[in-house]
Structures are given as C-alpha cells and as structure tokens.
Length: 433
Image (tube, rainbow, N blue to C red; front, side):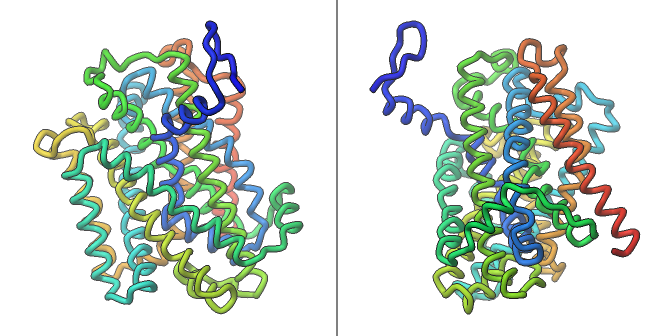
C-alpha cells in the first residue's frame, strides 16, 4: 500500500513508519525526561492518596503539554535561539532574570531530589550504602555530560526512554479494576481541600514542568548545530516540513510521557489506594509496599524504572539550567561544544549536580522533597507559561509561524488551570483544610 504525499511523490506505509522513528529525538527525550524520579514519586503519591481521581489530568494535560512544548520548539526554530535568550531580548530584564533564577533554583532542588530517589531505588536492588549510590550517579552523570559528544548522548537518551515501559508492565501485573479506571479517566473530579489540591499542583507541576520548556528549545538549536548550522543567521527561519516533523516528535513524546504517568497512578491506586495505604511520601515507599500486594516482580520493575528515568532526567535538568544561565547571561553554550570552549556552561552543569550530591550527603531530606519539588515546579510554571504563550503568539517574533487561535486557547487554558490550582492550594492551606 502507498500513500501520496504531494508533488507526485508516493511513500509506502513502511517508509512513513521509518521516517517517523528517524525524526524522533528532542520531543521524545523531553517527554521521557518528564517522568523523572520526582514525577514518578508524585504520580505514586497521587495514586496512593487520591486513588484514581486524578487520572483525568493525564488526559487533559496531554494536549496542553503538546501545545506548550510545540510553542517552545517553534520559537527556537524561528529565532535560531534558545528560549531564555528570546526572553532576555523580549521581556523586561528584571523579569527575564527573575524567571531564569526561579528555573535554575527549581532545577537544582529537583536534581538533588532525583539523585536521592535514584540512590534509594538502587539500594533496594543492590544494598550498597545510599550515599555511595548518590556519589556514583552524580559523578558519573557529570563526567558523561562534560566529556561525551552530543550525538552519542542524544542516541543514549533516545534508547533510555525504553526504561519507562517498566511502569506500563507493572500496571498489568497488578490487575486493576479497568471499568473504574476508565470512568475516572474520562470524568473529571475535584476535591476542595489543601491535600488534594496540593497533589493536583504537584501532578501538573511534574507534567508541565519548567525545565522541559528550556530543554526542548535548546535541543532544537543543538540539532541545528549538529546538522551544520553553526551561526545564528543560518538557524533563523523554518519551513513547513520541519515544523510538521517537530510536531510529530513532540506529540509522540508528550503522549508517551502521560501514558506512563497514567499507568503509575493506576498501579499505586490499585495496590496501595484500594488497600488503605494512603500515607506514602516517595516512589521508593510505593515500591516497597508493592511487594506484599503485587509481588517482587512489580517492585523490581518499579525500582529499575526509577533508576533509568533518573539517569535520563538529571542530565536534562542540569543541562536545562546551563542553557538558561548561558542564554540569560550571554556566555558560550552547547553540548556540541568541547568543555574547554564552554567552561562556564559545563561548570553550571557540574555545580548543579554537585549541589544535588551535597543535599543528600548533608542529610537534606531530598527523598521526601521529590513530591514538594513537583509542587514548586507547578507554582513556578505559571508565569513562565504566560511568557511562552505571549512570545509564541507575537507576530513580530514569529511572523507566519505565530501560534494559531486554537493553540493560543489551549496555552491560556493551561495557564488558567495551573494558576487556579496553585491559588486554590494556597487558599485551603491558609484555611487549614
């Protein structure tokens, strides 16, 4: 069977299938990095504490994620620059510096939390001291980002996304009540109390999260550099085929990310929520609790997936901070650059991960911080989202590639949902309910 693709050209189903997998890259990596140890912990807490009541968020947030990440990618494709660089040029400097600082602080906090989560998960499989695992993961990830070439890192990240299938498999192992799951996936629910709303903010914050906005845009620039467009002038502008491929990549990554989130919530709601085990703080506690309810295999899948996603997400977070700092304060950037040509860029990566290691070695409770780092991201994302939607909708910046009316509607709906959830959380916290 063949499909006509225009201008008399015909492509077979097989050729289109191969093309689709060839273009997967920044969007898929970004989507997979969204399910980091902080995200896994947040989804685990959501399933255990609120049952299936937040499954509808994975449905509603998927087009929101796709629209926002598509905006970030398109801004980079049109301007030839990363998101932070565009913000520095187009927003008041005080606002641009403030947003950059919030992202870097949130990323660094998240790195420490994720290293702690990875170490605790690895300890469940191989009981070496947790501090040794923290040091091993942290130093190893610094070395990989500083000394390995970008092309190799990108290929490795692409294959590492397969580790997320562990959570899909685990959900089928525990035999959830699928009719109830389907009903709560389709029908939205709200509970007006601080606990439920803070969990909702955490879920949204770890799903539509700030570090991914900057990473997505910066990876688009890295891909252009990798293809030979090393000057800003050569990277400016785009064309329909490139935008179409980008949206296919981004949409695939965001759908994959939320499918994984859906199955994590299903797994923990089935094994913990339905058995009255509501008070867990981390994915490690969820994994340990899974053993008597679902067996050693489900626990092992859960913990190994935690390590795999951490190896993917920590470099993304540290790299996102480095891109934000470089583009905001105007120094040489890029994973394509050798470390001696971009010492400040790689220095930000190294310092961010070293601070994360220190958080754990100094007994800052980074593991419990996994959930609250997602809540912090949920609050920090609101002003960033507003800035992104405004930039992507500005014809003086985007020209013919400014966002459509539908995309703008989804973008502002995302701002409203996340802003409303954050305001509601603070309101009910203040009331003490």
